[in-house]
Image 1 (tube, rainbow, N blue to C red):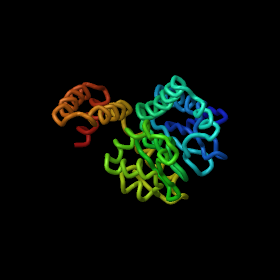
Image 2: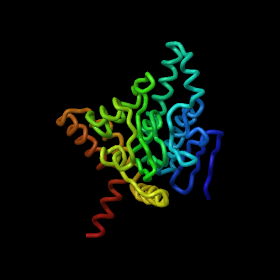
Image 3: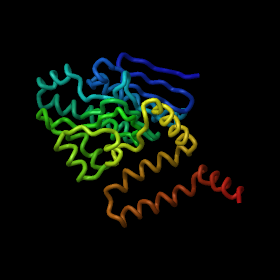
Image 4: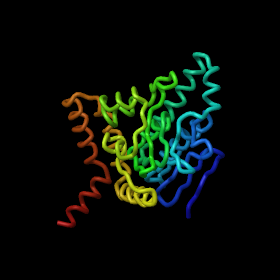
Length: 258
Protein backbone atom coordinates (compact mmCIF):
# COMPACT_ATOMS: atom_id res chain seq x y z
CA UNK A 1 0.00 0.00 0.00
CA UNK A 2 1.39 3.41 -0.99
CA UNK A 3 1.83 5.95 1.77
CA UNK A 4 2.02 9.67 1.07
CA UNK A 5 2.82 12.91 2.85
CA UNK A 6 1.46 16.09 1.31
CA UNK A 7 2.11 19.81 1.79
CA UNK A 8 0.95 22.65 -0.41
CA UNK A 9 4.09 22.75 -2.54
CA UNK A 10 5.73 19.36 -1.93
CA UNK A 11 4.37 15.82 -2.25
CA UNK A 12 6.16 12.80 -0.81
CA UNK A 13 4.80 9.38 -1.73
CA UNK A 14 6.20 6.03 -0.67
CA UNK A 15 5.30 3.02 -2.79
CA UNK A 16 7.00 -0.25 -1.88
CA UNK A 17 10.75 0.56 -1.77
CA UNK A 18 10.62 3.73 -3.89
CA UNK A 19 9.79 7.20 -2.60
CA UNK A 20 8.74 9.92 -5.06
CA UNK A 21 9.28 13.57 -4.12
CA UNK A 22 7.24 15.92 -6.31
CA UNK A 23 7.69 19.69 -6.53
CA UNK A 24 4.08 20.84 -6.54
CA UNK A 25 3.76 24.36 -7.84
CA UNK A 26 2.72 23.55 -11.43
CA UNK A 27 1.18 26.96 -12.20
CA UNK A 28 4.65 28.49 -11.59
CA UNK A 29 6.63 25.67 -13.22
CA UNK A 30 7.58 24.37 -9.76
CA UNK A 31 9.73 27.37 -8.95
CA UNK A 32 11.53 27.49 -5.60
CA UNK A 33 11.00 29.61 -2.52
CA UNK A 34 12.25 29.31 1.06
CA UNK A 35 9.37 27.08 2.14
CA UNK A 36 9.86 24.63 -0.71
CA UNK A 37 13.63 24.53 -0.22
CA UNK A 38 13.26 23.81 3.49
CA UNK A 39 10.71 21.11 2.69
CA UNK A 40 13.02 19.50 0.14
CA UNK A 41 15.97 19.38 2.52
CA UNK A 42 13.80 17.94 5.28
CA UNK A 43 12.23 15.34 2.97
CA UNK A 44 15.58 14.03 1.76
CA UNK A 45 16.99 13.82 5.27
CA UNK A 46 13.92 11.85 6.39
CA UNK A 47 13.96 9.54 3.36
CA UNK A 48 17.68 8.97 3.76
CA UNK A 49 17.04 7.68 7.29
CA UNK A 50 14.01 5.57 6.33
CA UNK A 51 15.19 1.96 6.02
CA UNK A 52 12.07 0.99 4.06
CA UNK A 53 13.10 3.32 1.22
CA UNK A 54 15.70 2.05 -1.23
CA UNK A 55 15.42 4.61 -4.07
CA UNK A 56 14.19 8.22 -4.27
CA UNK A 57 12.70 9.78 -7.42
CA UNK A 58 12.62 13.59 -7.64
CA UNK A 59 10.22 15.16 -10.14
CA UNK A 60 7.90 18.09 -10.80
CA UNK A 61 4.13 18.36 -11.24
CA UNK A 62 2.37 19.64 -14.34
CA UNK A 63 4.87 18.84 -17.08
CA UNK A 64 7.91 20.77 -15.79
CA UNK A 65 10.71 19.84 -13.41
CA UNK A 66 11.71 23.20 -11.89
CA UNK A 67 12.19 26.62 -13.50
CA UNK A 68 14.41 28.11 -10.80
CA UNK A 69 13.43 30.71 -8.23
CA UNK A 70 9.85 31.86 -7.67
CA UNK A 71 9.23 35.44 -8.89
CA UNK A 72 7.88 36.68 -5.54
CA UNK A 73 10.89 35.12 -3.83
CA UNK A 74 13.22 36.97 -6.21
CA UNK A 75 11.54 40.22 -5.18
CA UNK A 76 12.26 39.38 -1.53
CA UNK A 77 15.89 38.59 -2.32
CA UNK A 78 16.24 42.05 -3.83
CA UNK A 79 15.54 43.49 -0.38
CA UNK A 80 17.88 41.17 1.56
CA UNK A 81 20.98 42.42 3.31
CA UNK A 82 24.29 40.58 3.55
CA UNK A 83 23.31 38.39 6.52
CA UNK A 84 19.95 37.47 5.00
CA UNK A 85 21.58 36.57 1.69
CA UNK A 86 24.17 34.41 3.43
CA UNK A 87 21.44 32.62 5.39
CA UNK A 88 19.40 32.15 2.24
CA UNK A 89 22.40 30.81 0.31
CA UNK A 90 23.05 28.40 3.17
CA UNK A 91 19.49 27.10 2.81
CA UNK A 92 19.98 26.31 -0.87
CA UNK A 93 23.36 24.72 -0.17
CA UNK A 94 21.63 22.46 2.35
CA UNK A 95 19.06 21.43 -0.28
CA UNK A 96 21.77 20.47 -2.75
CA UNK A 97 23.75 18.54 -0.14
CA UNK A 98 20.68 16.74 1.21
CA UNK A 99 20.04 15.40 -2.30
CA UNK A 100 23.67 14.78 -3.28
CA UNK A 101 24.53 13.04 0.01
CA UNK A 102 21.29 11.11 0.39
CA UNK A 103 22.45 7.55 1.17
CA UNK A 104 19.84 6.22 -1.24
CA UNK A 105 20.23 6.50 -5.05
CA UNK A 106 18.28 9.51 -6.34
CA UNK A 107 16.76 9.68 -9.82
CA UNK A 108 15.71 13.01 -11.33
CA UNK A 109 12.65 12.46 -13.53
CA UNK A 110 12.69 15.49 -15.82
CA UNK A 111 10.05 16.88 -18.16
CA UNK A 112 9.89 20.41 -19.51
CA UNK A 113 12.05 23.08 -17.91
CA UNK A 114 14.96 22.36 -15.58
CA UNK A 115 16.47 25.82 -15.31
CA UNK A 116 18.93 27.65 -13.05
CA UNK A 117 18.43 26.35 -9.49
CA UNK A 118 16.12 23.69 -10.90
CA UNK A 119 18.91 22.43 -13.12
CA UNK A 120 21.20 22.51 -10.09
CA UNK A 121 18.78 20.33 -8.13
CA UNK A 122 18.68 17.82 -10.99
CA UNK A 123 22.49 17.85 -11.11
CA UNK A 124 22.60 16.87 -7.43
CA UNK A 125 20.81 13.59 -8.26
CA UNK A 126 22.67 10.40 -9.10
CA UNK A 127 20.83 9.79 -12.36
CA UNK A 128 18.90 12.16 -14.61
CA UNK A 129 16.29 10.52 -16.81
CA UNK A 130 14.57 13.01 -19.12
CA UNK A 131 11.96 12.89 -21.82
CA UNK A 132 12.36 14.58 -25.19
CA UNK A 133 10.46 17.69 -24.02
CA UNK A 134 13.11 18.58 -21.43
CA UNK A 135 15.07 21.82 -21.64
CA UNK A 136 18.09 22.49 -19.45
CA UNK A 137 19.82 25.80 -18.80
CA UNK A 138 21.68 27.99 -16.34
CA UNK A 139 20.19 31.43 -16.96
CA UNK A 140 21.72 33.34 -14.04
CA UNK A 141 24.20 35.54 -15.94
CA UNK A 142 21.38 36.98 -18.05
CA UNK A 143 19.98 38.67 -14.95
CA UNK A 144 23.04 39.76 -12.99
CA UNK A 145 23.26 36.60 -10.89
CA UNK A 146 26.22 34.24 -10.64
CA UNK A 147 25.49 30.47 -10.86
CA UNK A 148 27.67 29.96 -7.81
CA UNK A 149 26.04 27.17 -5.81
CA UNK A 150 25.03 25.09 -8.81
CA UNK A 151 28.41 25.27 -10.56
CA UNK A 152 30.36 22.71 -8.47
CA UNK A 153 27.75 20.05 -9.22
CA UNK A 154 27.70 20.87 -12.92
CA UNK A 155 31.50 20.75 -13.19
CA UNK A 156 31.48 17.33 -11.52
CA UNK A 157 28.95 16.03 -14.04
CA UNK A 158 30.18 17.45 -17.32
CA UNK A 159 33.70 18.81 -16.76
CA UNK A 160 35.01 22.37 -16.83
CA UNK A 161 34.88 22.97 -20.58
CA UNK A 162 31.21 22.08 -20.99
CA UNK A 163 30.32 23.80 -17.73
CA UNK A 164 31.86 27.02 -19.08
CA UNK A 165 29.70 26.68 -22.18
CA UNK A 166 26.47 26.34 -20.21
CA UNK A 167 27.23 28.80 -17.40
CA UNK A 168 28.63 31.62 -19.55
CA UNK A 169 26.25 31.47 -22.51
CA UNK A 170 23.12 30.83 -20.40
CA UNK A 171 21.72 28.97 -23.42
CA UNK A 172 19.06 26.29 -23.28
CA UNK A 173 19.91 22.78 -24.42
CA UNK A 174 17.54 19.94 -25.20
CA UNK A 175 17.62 16.52 -23.60
CA UNK A 176 19.69 14.98 -26.37
CA UNK A 177 22.47 17.58 -26.17
CA UNK A 178 22.33 17.29 -22.39
CA UNK A 179 22.88 13.54 -22.74
CA UNK A 180 25.76 14.11 -25.15
CA UNK A 181 27.37 16.45 -22.59
CA UNK A 182 26.97 13.94 -19.78
CA UNK A 183 24.45 16.01 -17.85
CA UNK A 184 21.60 13.57 -18.57
CA UNK A 185 21.97 9.80 -18.34
CA UNK A 186 18.99 8.62 -20.38
CA UNK A 187 16.43 10.17 -22.75
CA UNK A 188 13.08 8.68 -23.65
CA UNK A 189 9.84 9.69 -25.31
CA UNK A 190 7.27 11.33 -23.00
CA UNK A 191 4.96 8.31 -22.93
CA UNK A 192 7.86 6.07 -21.86
CA UNK A 193 9.33 8.27 -19.14
CA UNK A 194 7.58 6.59 -16.22
CA UNK A 195 8.49 3.13 -17.51
CA UNK A 196 12.15 4.10 -17.85
CA UNK A 197 12.27 5.62 -14.35
CA UNK A 198 10.57 2.51 -12.91
CA UNK A 199 13.00 0.26 -14.76
CA UNK A 200 16.01 1.98 -13.18
CA UNK A 201 14.37 2.20 -9.75
CA UNK A 202 13.79 -1.55 -9.84
CA UNK A 203 17.41 -2.19 -10.86
CA UNK A 204 18.69 -0.07 -8.01
CA UNK A 205 16.37 -1.72 -5.48
CA UNK A 206 17.98 -5.08 -6.26
CA UNK A 207 21.40 -3.87 -5.07
CA UNK A 208 22.47 -3.91 -1.43
CA UNK A 209 21.77 -0.63 0.42
CA UNK A 210 25.11 -0.49 2.26
CA UNK A 211 27.05 -1.04 -0.95
CA UNK A 212 25.11 1.70 -2.71
CA UNK A 213 25.68 4.11 0.16
CA UNK A 214 29.40 3.35 0.30
CA UNK A 215 29.74 3.65 -3.47
CA UNK A 216 28.11 7.10 -3.41
CA UNK A 217 30.46 8.20 -0.63
CA UNK A 218 33.43 6.80 -2.52
CA UNK A 219 32.58 8.69 -5.71
CA UNK A 220 32.39 11.95 -3.78
CA UNK A 221 35.65 11.33 -1.94
CA UNK A 222 37.81 10.26 -4.89
CA UNK A 223 36.61 12.93 -7.34
CA UNK A 224 39.15 15.53 -6.22
CA UNK A 225 41.96 13.28 -5.01
CA UNK A 226 45.24 12.62 -6.83
CA UNK A 227 45.39 9.13 -8.32
CA UNK A 228 47.47 7.47 -5.59
CA UNK A 229 45.43 9.06 -2.81
CA UNK A 230 42.24 7.91 -4.54
CA UNK A 231 43.60 4.38 -4.81
CA UNK A 232 44.60 4.40 -1.13
CA UNK A 233 41.07 5.49 -0.18
CA UNK A 234 39.63 2.75 -2.41
CA UNK A 235 42.04 0.17 -0.94
CA UNK A 236 40.85 0.88 2.59
CA UNK A 237 37.20 0.88 1.55
CA UNK A 238 37.66 -2.38 -0.34
CA UNK A 239 39.19 -4.08 2.69
CA UNK A 240 36.47 -2.78 5.02
CA UNK A 241 33.68 -3.85 2.66
CA UNK A 242 34.95 -7.44 2.68
CA UNK A 243 34.08 -7.67 6.38
CA UNK A 244 30.42 -6.71 5.98
CA UNK A 245 27.51 -9.17 6.21
CA UNK A 246 26.27 -8.07 2.77
CA UNK A 247 29.61 -9.00 1.18
CA UNK A 248 29.76 -12.37 2.91
CA UNK A 249 26.18 -13.14 1.88
CA UNK A 250 26.81 -12.08 -1.71
CA UNK A 251 30.03 -14.08 -1.88
CA UNK A 252 28.23 -17.18 -0.61
CA UNK A 253 25.60 -16.79 -3.33
CA UNK A 254 28.29 -16.48 -6.02
CA UNK A 255 30.12 -19.56 -4.78
CA UNK A 256 26.89 -21.52 -4.63
CA UNK A 257 26.33 -20.93 -8.35
CA UNK A 258 29.76 -22.25 -9.38
